[in-house]
Length: 332
Image (cartoon, rainbow, N blue to C red; front, side, top):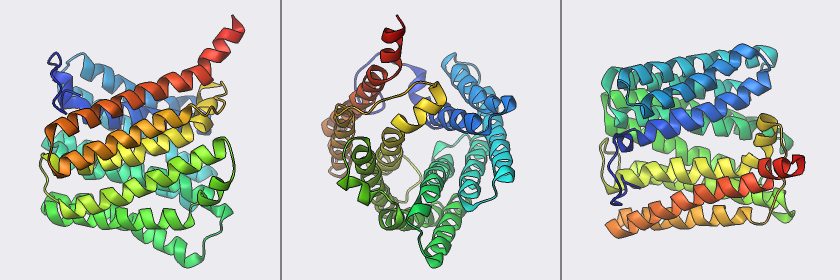
């Protein structure tokens, strides 16, 4: 909210907003999910280190230390995916593992250059490939033709090509990543088995609605990245980052939370219609923010950021009420 322009008590953590969200929160979340899937104690070191990197950042220790810890976390998560691939050699874990290597590459670039704009394409490839790999695993139900699977692999390679290209030419690399994101969004809209789920009720429809909304945000992000390939900050930079990191990524978090959290926390998270509240608030706030970035309108961006913040808070409240807190009340 400070970065969006709200007058709140100053804090140095505002500068670390992106790394804390990508490496600290999402990196730890993905690492925990995969450590549970692997079932080996050493695998939990990856999410623990991602969390430790966040703690070090919050405590204000030298940033080089936190960056090194985040890099180690990503390296360990890559080892987790290598072990998962050895257990079950298949394309989806290979795609997700390639995404983790992009996270590691981004962390190394961040350590070497201290430049977040140069790091962002790497982290974007990490999250897009991680999510797309998970969805590819589920798309086997729809059985896409072989040429479609080949197209998916080529799009993944194109997405991995963008970040290193951006180190040489920012515009070329970012537009390469943009083309890959547009293609990946189109592929997911066509072959992901989400659309038929809209005809069902309850959790199935909620999950499908969030998935499809996320794919549309990924498409919008690709268009924005292509139209505004500059490496530095500004309104368009704000729009293109939040379209992918908030619109796409958090749509996926909302969609998968009732499914993934029970496996990680050991408590069920029953679906509630109230879940549509945090989803609607997220998209309304982001539409306002991106529109304000395009005009540009500083007040619109501030209010859009506030609505997104409230959406995340409401998501935590709704999830806790549906799952862990309900279980706690029952136990008491």
